[in-house]
View 1 (cartoon, rainbow over the protein chains, first blue to last red):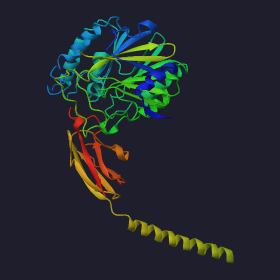
View 2: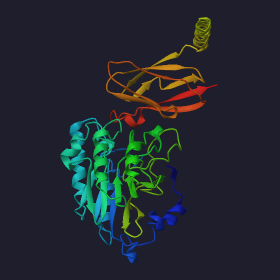
View 3: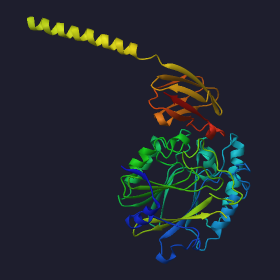
View 4: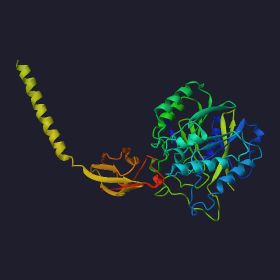
Length: 297
Length: 122
């Protein structure tokens, strides 16, 4: 199995082979960039909101960025079929009461989304200190599946175990779910952490992610969308494409580009730089996902 | 009978040679250096350690408060540190450079800054 990063040119090349096209988020109208080709549907991915984070050097609008993103999604010309939050809804706290207060506020803000089919999954900031207990009180299961217009979606929890493992029980659940899917099923996986070893030196990995990839590898059309690293990253493990999303509180540096994984400081000349959300258009023929990245403001 | 005596003689000689080689190997192996590392929210003490290339080392790990991790991805080594227990991790650095070690068990609000540096010198 070959593991390698995408080149930008490959996005275009792969479009006809069940791959992905990246569309610039600057020139077209939001929610209509692929309207001419009548896509099956599109969804929006929001990630790493870190509600409760405070550091004006990193984000002087910590209380406003998520609200801006909600307003931007509400302003899309054609509403998405659903919205997926891929974890780290809140910034971690050692105080369980404060965690619930942050989750309450986050839920109130997300409740302002006009689209009501909104799905959630935890990040390690939400779930690793209490094995997902508070998250479940607010949003239910931490791993689950759903189907939408011919695509099978699988949400994998690789954060409720503080050791960043999926665990044998969930892997067995994944195996059994995949066994029910035809080999050529269109499958989209959501995780918080990368399933592959992106950069373990910064904890950008899942301890038993290779086992999940081996299970997913038995199917022809699998694409993974995840968060955690607060920036775009596109990577292939065999024929599985993995796409990380930008965050909505602070950007993080490129893996290994500096000694420590510290948030990127706010750039007053380019506010909200590095922050954003994405729309993903699911195409049936050929099976592909057109990703459009949108800035917060 | 003669053949049996010859076989036993060869076998005995081989055992002596192997024992000698084993002893020489044991003598050639330097004794591992012991490095004690105390973890606590959200630091390691020490957080910078200088090692010599090819010198075996045993990290003797303890944690003062909660369960912690100790991971050195560049040497594919990790361990979980349990409060009240001493955990030992042995490595022999085979490359020169600076290598991060970090906590890979989410341990609290300062977890993401809990790391240290191994400097391996020739």
